[in-house]
Each structure stands twice: as structure tokens, then as C-alpha cells.
Picture (tube, rainbow, N blue to C red):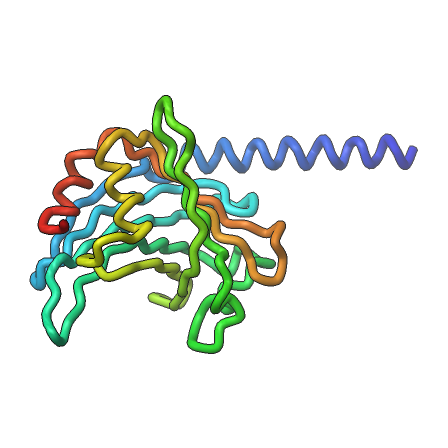
Length: 203
């Protein structure tokens, strides 16, 4: 009787999970790309989608940005931001571990970026990253480097997206639990012209 009851429970859980994912597919807004430019010349290329994170349907945005100009007082920057909505539903992932100068994540390479291109081995890089709270229910991660620096993995990633990449995967690992990860997948094959424009002005 116990085994039968457990089997029924597991079966019900599977049905509920499938129903939840089906409902998400039916109600979530379609994934979309957006190109924007600030008055100071900073260019953005953003991908917004809804996908399961830790089993929960979650809206996220991956933003590629470039400020190509540098002066004595201001350094141009190039990088990637990841915004996550409704972070309270994603426990036990502890977003606070990434926020502030004393963050537990500081000094740890908890970000993995993988660029996939047809006929080539994936380009994989691990990096430090920082985080902040842009809104009450959201959290943002960021990795960046000076845009006029001759070499950086950020520049290598973005140039691969211009050339021949078809997908980008971003994985963020919780500092307290290596098995706890947030995974973001971005289809990039149709955005090569936009990525080229994003990098205009860089050497």
C-alpha cells in the first residue's frame, strides 16, 4: 500500500510538473530581442525570455553592452548583464551571496560562459562576477572589462557571436552549493549584424 501510495504521489507530481511547464509555454510572452542606445553612446543588445530556473518558470534578460569611448576620467566598458525576475521564488539559491563588497562570491569564478559554433569545439570561459539589486523582486549579475583593452574574454565572446556562433549558454553556480546552478540559454544565430554594430569603434 505504501509503495502504491508513493507511486501515485510521484505520478501526480510528474503530471503537475508537466502541466506547469505547459501552462508556462502557453502564457509566457514570446522571447524577444531589443536594441537600444543611451544618450552617452552606450549600446545595448538584450534578449528576454521565460524559461525554467530551478524548476520554476522565470523571466530573465541577458544584456550585452558596450560603451566604446574612453577618456582620462571615464573608461569605456564592455560586458554582459543578466537580470532575473521574482528571485524570491528561486530559493534555496542565495542571491545575496553575490551582492556588495563583502559578498561571499567575491574572488570565486562562479560564472561559466559557453559559446557554441557549428563545426568548432565550444569556447568555454570561467569568470568572476558581481551582483546587485536593481528592483525589489529582481537581481542582476554582471561581468565587464574595459572596452578598449586589447584582449579580454568579453571581447572574444562577443566577436564569436559576430562570426559564426549559434548559441550562448551562461551558467551561474551558487557559492555555498556547487550543485545549485542558474542556467540561461540564448539563441544568437540571427543577431550577428546587431552584435557587429554593438562592437563598432573597438579595435
